[in-house]
Image (tube, rainbow, N blue to C red):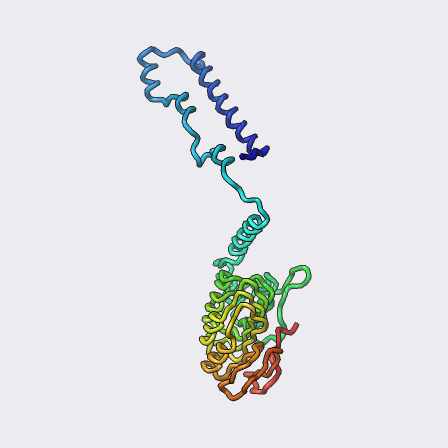
Length: 303
């Protein structure tokens, strides 16, 4: 059974009125001549041949592109809660993709380091530059202090994107960060295996990586991290979407001898001789690359 709404009924009524108005105008033109002198029979015949028959045009069906009311009201719509939620999620995905698309003008004006910093801080993250101890993040009023012009000596060293809505498309704004050493993607709900595959662009610089609580990351995505040849600390806590992490950790540690992995409970033999090691607490020691001193691994940026 077809359900008519007020908007559909008004559209159908408006279309019908427009047709009747056009018929009335054609009738008045034929009877009054439209204010022109009456044409001779031969001239009238030639003009009729050139112009389309208005009455026949009225009888033609309305094309679908111009808004076929009958086909519109005959279409079945799913207004169930699940369908509405699905459409809402699709709309949010399109908006998010457009918001995180690559901004050419921003990169041309600021350069890759400052452009990436603005991109992350604006979305609730934090950044740290080489030679600076303080992390830069937005305040309660979403205001932050970052240069709005290119500065050559501002090299991005740390990037905290935890709890943000960073997606695969957003990584287009993180290119050419040759000095990036510290990266946190903790609790990023849209980070998946394809995003981890893009981390290969930091293979010559990245030393610390946190991918804890990323539900869409699986063991396949974790396995590609062997390309990060400088990686020394990897945190993987509460990885609900990944299976067989113990075996993946063994492979990563075999490929990267200096790598320390935290957050994975070991029940198999570690090739380095540590049998049954439990690192599920996320603690542990890491090596300070500047001094060579062993210290406790930092769980996140210090404010």
